[in-house]
Image (tube, rainbow, N blue to C red):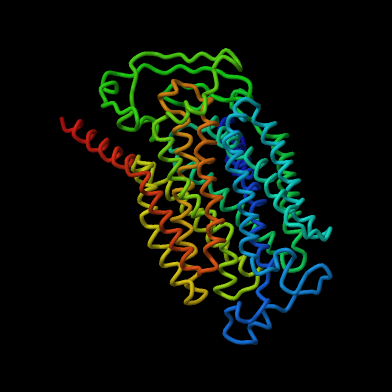
Length: 528
């Protein structure tokens, strides 16, 4: 018998279950990357909506020649004023652009609290597909203002509000789906890699928007809108909510839990643990913040069966019930400030680079993608470290502690030249996005399957929505504050970001202390 070709041998070396999990991993990665792809254009287009050409004293150029080059239009448009797109061509343009950010992010923050509650009561595939189609519509709607020569501020604000609301369907849905397919083993690393969809989406969104920003900025919104709508159709056609739907084996786990699958549930049985395992010290607040084999987890010595009689067999957790899960409030408040920093960079970094490096909107947009490249490595590194140390809060705290002085260095070094800016963008992106990525993925999934829930995994969508919704409050405040503070100088914006990082670390101190004490207790227990 002839040997199998290498390609076929590679395919057959993986089981059917493994191929399905790889498919769901890749599909949810692309689905949520398209969400971030559609959010990025506004930050790229800001430099085109307002150009620094009102008066020479308002533009910090070293020579009149540089000033003349900067304001020279790529091509003359009849509906474009000399200083940008009305109404953003006025002296208060930073406040108006900040209002666009604030409209989207406030709607997103409010909608996120409702999205998790609604999402756990509806089939994920339908809920997510409809949200993506609506998001494509409202993203493209903003760009249509260019083609129809619309200069009414409220048109753009309403487009942002509507888009912010429908985009809340994304995160609780994809986290719940990925949680159904993957267990807690090496969750930090797996979700750290998976969460790089955020940075990949930002990078692609920046490149797509930057391609048209100087010639036809309306397409910078229309094309991302088309992409996310197409991905919504892909979601409807191919998303598998749970391994049970395709007769795949369930994720191995040593704890009992029910799994969310739209309108249906199923049950699994917990194996009996030996006496050595049941003798581990108990610390309810640390349960399921780490991996299954983690020390300090509570173990049971009997078989437990979780019933699942259908859609109404396991009641959905209430909003207050989810808040009572140990760690939810602390991580939510930490994410509020961590996301404040991340989204300030997301919405204002290209304009900052334009002002400091004196680059046009396209080049500034391309350069800003380096921050997201650093974010990819930061998210993976945070997940790897937290799995290795078995300490989620301590990992976040360590990165937040390093982020604050790094931001100060970035504000100082970025004025020294393009090379220094590139290096600091990579480092800052890793340290700023690392904790943000870890909390929104692995930590949310850990808390959504906490022991206190007694196997009710329907809480996962609600817990995810609470944590990310609270973080979105910070995401709304960050760009707003940047718009209000930046007229007094960009240094003041960086001081605000450093204070926010310090506050994020402050809210984690109790959990960090508990993790360290838990580790010391276990070390003492083993010695005896």
